[in-house]
Figure 1: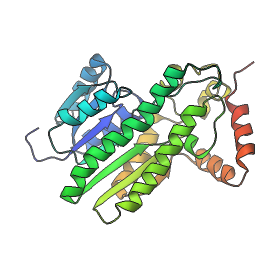
Figure 2: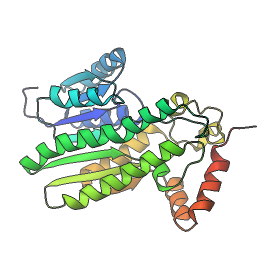
Figure 3: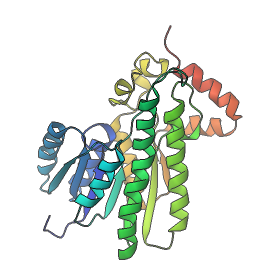
Length: 260
């Protein structure tokens, strides 16, 4: 990437919210480094994004593998002006029944990869005195989530982590933004084996990933600390803030349990 355009690195950029974010960056003239596991999807997404007249680098990595995350840091030699930690997964089911290794992979992907990439690229941004970071949280991070106990907990980490380092680096020239969507019409629920959940059955209640991405993109560019995407999700979080955690957990259990 030899032109003078700024560069954004986006993980999970071939599907869902990540891909919609990539489109917005491309439309605004940002060069892109897109990261995902599937090389074919990366190639197809890159070809689509290049139609905006920008340069796109693709890197295939499994970000649930910490060695591959560290390798990603080493392989990226160009300046990253904006980091978007979008890649994330969940798993559906009762904690006592779910496979431990799968849950650990989710913790590695949703938490550890975010920490590693943020530390690496934010150190470079701090040396330059400017940069932006967008971390994909979820309204799940604001409430306990029976049937998705580990996923909700990882998103609570993302929100807390983003808020803390924003305060630590408030005078650095770097902004940190957390995007908190609710249920969104992406492949997330299919990958989480969650299609039998009550919350997934109501497709009309799901957000459009393009709308979520737009909310996150605008908040990132404005330097906003966090944005809850969608009025219904704002209301749900607001009501949850006024209820005991035990009551919120019960409500979520009812929403997320399998359809009988």
